[in-house]
Image (cartoon, rainbow, N blue to C red):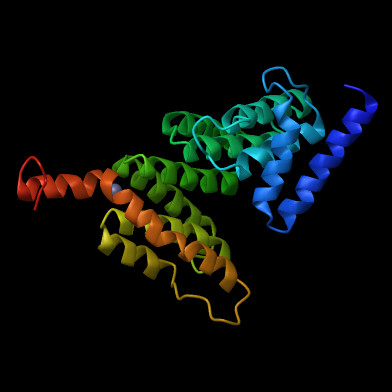
Length: 252
Ligand SMILES: [Zn+2]
């Protein structure tokens, strides 16, 4: 690659970053796809801007079958390249691990996503970063839950939740997000009494219109019904209840 070609490529990556910053996700993904199309994620060098481009592209690209450039391959590249360039414990490497787990999860590759997420949890634990460790355990619980491993998910989330509130004010803002994720899983599994108990422990009331967290809360709140609906066909708790009350086929 000539110096001029590299300069053009770097300009495109910076341009895509600016597009993403103003929420123009589709155009940003298109620009990044052009950059990555001519490269092989298996042999691309661990270049700082390229790592950024690969992570951003894999996060923004719509996960369609046969997607070119391949979002999982580029998310894997970003992790591998960040590790080679910065080392295994660098913040960029940890971000790349988080990104890879999220991309695998969106693609429905739950076992692979769980493996990466567990590795990330261990890295945080090894470094004594307990809050990040607990936050990632909630993320793992969400992944397990989406895969229909309801008991494992709730056990994981409850452990993280109890450890979290032993270290933080149950009514604090940081606690709010963890509580909402845990409660969403409980509701989706029809464990309503437990959901109410967790909300009560956090003294939860929705933020007012004047509250600066309102927008973030609303953004999360709209995902809750989707999570609940998507969980229904895979929920082992609901489906075992249905089988027990209606027979093997679960038809009412
Ligand atoms: Zn469930």
